Length: 88
Image 1 (cartoon, helix red, strand yellow):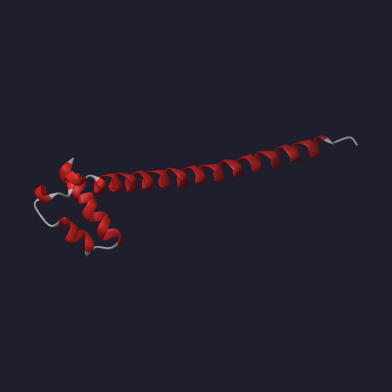
Image 2: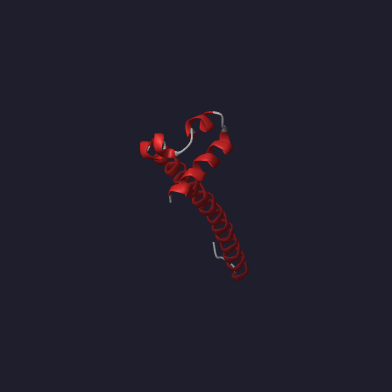
């Protein structure tokens, strides 16, 4: 079956549109994964900081464990992030 010139152009345009859609989808996936990696790295930094006894020993100046014990979710992260910033 012989393709007409118009049909070839229409198929080419359709292919180009599909590539644009795939590119947009890939960009969205990359943005999501980049944010996810940043979040995971931040969580890993918090975890390592919490595991280091030097950051929470008697010389830390306050009862940080009590503050952490009374914190939840975002406030917990904020306390740990604050301690990390002080030790930086």
